[in-house]
Picture 1 (cartoon, rainbow, N blue to C red):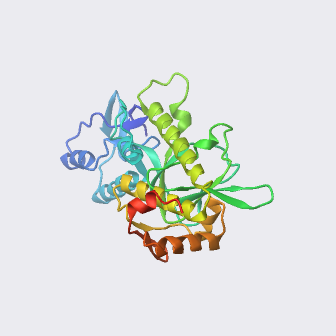
Picture 2 (cartoon, rainbow, N blue to C red; picture 1 turned 90 degrees about the vertical axis):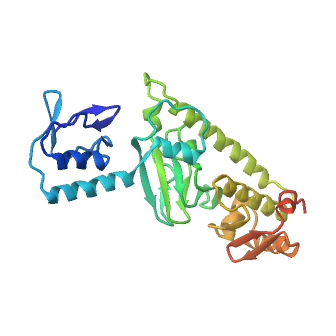
Picture 3 (tube, rainbow, N blue to C red; picture 1 turned 120 degrees about the horizontal axis):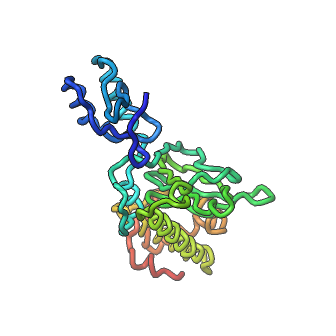
Length: 297
């Protein structure tokens, strides 16, 4: 069984058939575009046209419907990636074609592990993750927390393997961008490469900004800057900038800022005592945003 392909996707361009129900079904369930590697059940190529080769029963229609819904849930469009990254540049590529594979990652599972062969970069669709670097002595250091719209794995491109490990802190979903496909020689530019360059550059800038947090003089200042950065990220994603639920443990925060668990707890208590924040387990309410942003201990 073969299919007509266009731009890396199977495309049913013409369906000459007297079966109006099937024709309506294929068009109504968005099976005009199907991710590469899939074919439409019951369609085969004959003399530059696609023709019905079987009579499709109600059971087959139901099966096709389930397959269509499954494919839609497993793939993301360029438009969704652009929205998640908040990219305001231009892409000439179609934005409504499913072409990026989604992947569900359960809490505690890894997106990739240290030393694994580089297989592209990922955009966080939802959830929270932490990236950990394991030292030669076996100790682990948290080097980043990632939330919706953040980029994962870009540092693996230089040596073609990931040099750290990223774990899911909550139920997550990520979208894979196969960078080898978009940076291959001779590929016509459509703006996607520039979007990926932009996203990587933004991630580098964020890492540099976060590096300043871990080198603040006082632990209270480090925690205040961390919470302010988390609040800013929430606001950028359309969430409440004042009501935060920490997906990471205090131990993880301590590892990230190179302080102990007890130091993080004391810093949160100090900020709460000053009525800058209110703490209830992992729920943080920012009472005085200006004081938090400008806090210097």
